Length: 167
Image (cartoon, rainbow, N blue to C red; front, side):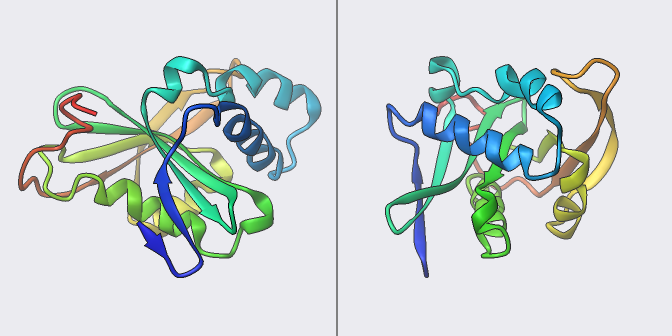
């Protein structure tokens, strides 16, 4: 997907460290302290297994500036695992572009919904993108921390390779 300033492309083998560091910078942007960030490090680390998922990377001027990570979550549902934008590129439209990419991966889909657990600081962004809060979910990294569970729905029109597991 070519963009006015850059492009969105599939992640490449060997980019796990770059994507992990980007996720950590993006999360830290919200002012979390070092102890919080240390607790999140494992959850934000892109492992070899995670790199096999559907990962799309935003690139501008040869630099990775953001990414999305998607995985099937049961019949007809896709999970948005990650949407991160480098803080130095906030406000440049990459969050919206990555969001649109995530939702257009399944426009003709049997997938009728995409779900995700949002960082509380990002909930408003997701609401502007059409997401709605459907409940709460416990953080995988921080005991006792509760995250907004969000969802967006659309009409099915075909076959979704993400939701059917045929990545």
